[in-house]
Image 1 (cartoon, one colour):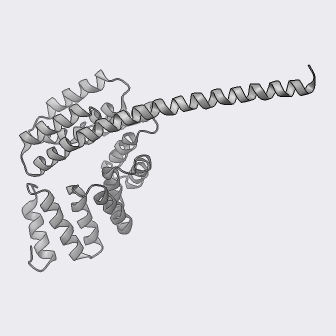
Image 2 (cartoon, one colour; image 1 turned 90 degrees about the vertical axis):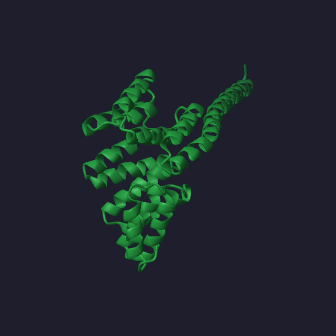
Image 3 (cartoon, one colour; image 1 turned 120 degrees about the vertical axis):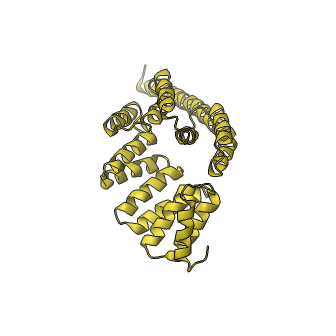
Length: 264
């Protein structure tokens, strides 16, 4: 075989190899897209139930809120925010032992699933054990934002705000559309005295979820720190409008009146 024929054959082999690679990549993308689409479809179906549950929770109607959030979790079993709301409802009913038992079982039934590890770990009082479990999440999946979020929370509880900020920043980078991540990053910035950065992050949380009551409350604190009292009062008004059953409602109303010359 002469050199020309050899070159032609090599070109054919190269082209075949490239075509096979492209085909494999296309199939991989298609399969990944199917999984992502399936996950997103489940979340979209669950969102209306979650929103209803949150509204009932904010109104203090806990039994109905529980029923609604269970429907959200049924539609999308790995809906972290829905699980967190469910945990808040049961904690309000003093069912902490039942919660620990339920989520320990979920973690055991789904070994290697970072979501259920996170949901169990966040219920623990032992910060060292929490930290161990959050690190385990990142050993399983180094790109799981909830692992970094959990580590950020542990650092926050230890008042190591610089480390907390680093971990919350990583969570935001991995999931920039999660308002909870922006809120906690902003809260740490606030404690570090970075009021402008704090305001930016917490504002982002309110933009992503305008009915996120805790974000409006925290935003008021950042405005107060900056002596922007009218804005602080307005943020607190939004907080109690969203959360009429807030346990600190009377205290918040008193603060609004102090900030706005006696006007509620």
